[in-house]
Length: 255
Ligand SMILES: NC(=O)c1ccc[n+]([C@@H]2O[C@H](COP(=O)([O-])OP(=O)(O)OC[C@H]3O[C@@H](n4cnc5c(N)ncnc54)[C@H](OP(=O)(O)O)[C@@H]3O)[C@@H](O)[C@H]2O)c1
Image (cartoon, rainbow, N blue to C red; front, side, top):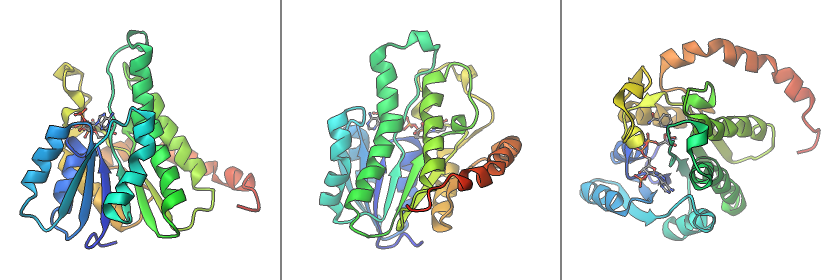
């Protein structure tokens, strides 16, 4: 896939991996809708891209809010006309023990990290009108392996992983779904957290964005921006693959 003349939506675009995706795409003649809660960050981003080939529009949405999640794809279609590529990238983690987070904090992690990407995909399937599209969800290495003090976050990201595994047995012609599994990435994600607690190894958001765009072009279904991490979980991936015949055996004959 070439990114020229494509209509692209990116959530969590004001910072980190989302912002790096926008910056990487700025070398193409494409239309991007950058979505985030951080209005100043979006305005700053759009100004930086004033003289690029890309056309950027911005949209402020709080993806912890169910009504705003519901309006995400309809608003994006209103602004872009159609959508070829959707990056459901916004997400956050609250570091700390499970007991230290109240209901509102637990709920907002579930809404932003899990409900928003899945609802966005649902809406895309309803509204794409037969048009082909790629839908890329930024999951996490924690979808595959848990880390201390990230229980709620890891729960949301691993749920995305299982969702994708089941979804791929359904017939959704025209929809290319890809999940991204970054390891620790040096972004605002860790702001407010003791630097000593940032897991080793780590990578830059640009490296993650480049890996994602390369994988979109190749229509991959998953991308591991860290080769080391992929090696570390190779036995787990092999074990998952062993279950494939059993999963296929349970696939309904129709649909
Ligand atoms: N950094 C890592 O180590 C790492 C590793 C694996 C996966 N990931 C995943 O990568 C994705 C991007 O994270 P990042 O590292 O780029 O972090 P980041 O620099 O904090 O960027 C995340 C962006 O999402 C926005 N956002 C947060 N809550 C939102 C909401 N309710 N509605 C709309 N936008 C919201 C943030 O806005 P505000 O600034 O206003 O909060 C921020 O601009 C996330 O899904 C994260 O889980 C990150």
